Image 1 (spheres, helix red, strand yellow):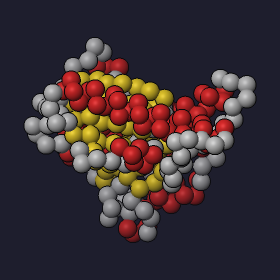
Image 2: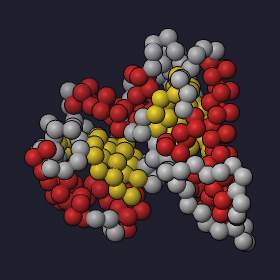
Image 3: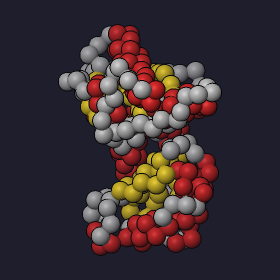
Image 4: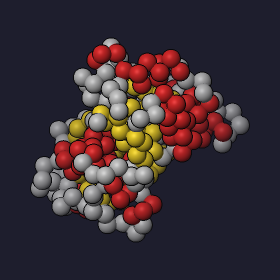
Length: 265
């Protein structure tokens, strides 16, 4: 049975199939949809339709979702076009990851999958710090023995920019760019906002991750992922690895184990 990994965040829906699984339809192995467009029905139905038709049948969809409306919209599209497929929304119980937090059942599935993937990428004797730059930015710690220890959550770049606009009378809404880093000294209001949002986030992430590394007491390995991972390029150092789709990697790592089990009802 073909495996389709799905990461449904608050801004983007990312879908991945094996690189060779969609070759017959000449479609890319990955597809990205904006969550807002998926919910509103304004996304390209033809684009999704072509991608869905190119995936071999039947398929099992392993879904990590933090946006319920987007998950339901995508599930309906799959159900209508591919009735033989199986839809499996992943939960905390599906991720064999030890945790050391107050409420394990309340940790986002995306954070758990990030940590699960990092456990397979890091060297066995080194702890890990996972930075996921999406709608929110999460900075999480994984111990040297593979336990998820929790971490920190702060606004993502777009959320921070929107807060400045909605929380003030005169500041405009300013977008962020993956293609170029803003000057630190902004010479206009827009440039100053871009500088504050980007460099402020980089500084916050560096401070949080650095303090976590000190507490972990070892040479921690940093992993950076998420839709805005490229904006955190200034974090690039020998101990930092960039993996744009760590949640999808985590789902695929789980896939073999889960596909061997009886599918849930």
